[in-house]
Image 1: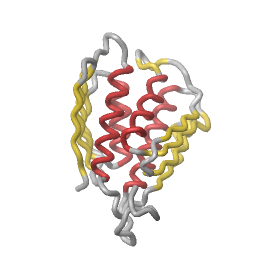
Image 2 (image 1 turned 120 degrees about the vertical axis):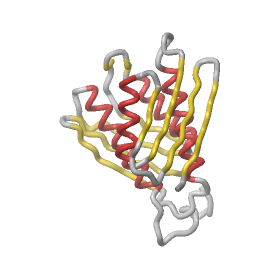
Image 3 (image 1 turned 90 degrees about the horizontal axis):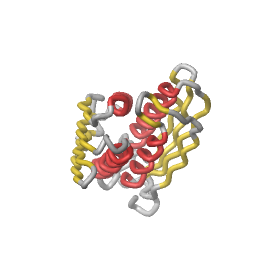
Length: 193
């Protein structure tokens, strides 16, 4: 099993993550933000990642610190679990519907962090402000070394939009981290990612 653990403690948050890339989609998630927990459970389920994640943060101030720090830790854990990237497919993409919402994701485990986030959806689901979703994926990219393109092709319902995005990223990341039996080196002409 390719897996990794990451812990991070700051004045604002305390986060612990364990991810297994070759899992079955099992998860134990507790961030104190129920909707975010739901999205992370979907991420684990649809990426077939085994994910344990606990976070405590200054939620009385805002959700931003907790959501971003979870992205940082999850990104570091993914990077560590991938290791030298020997034999991985490297690229992944997904087109995922959730009722009227349709999200498209393409990613490259390139070692060059970049996020293109083309999602024009604003508002709140209960207290969860959708503006923090982009920050989560930016932190994930920066710390996992991903080039990630997320496009919302259509959608009206904010819950459906978020769900389609998280599922699409999970499926694309699962595809990119899968081992290709024809390759035993890092998938780059440089020999490293």
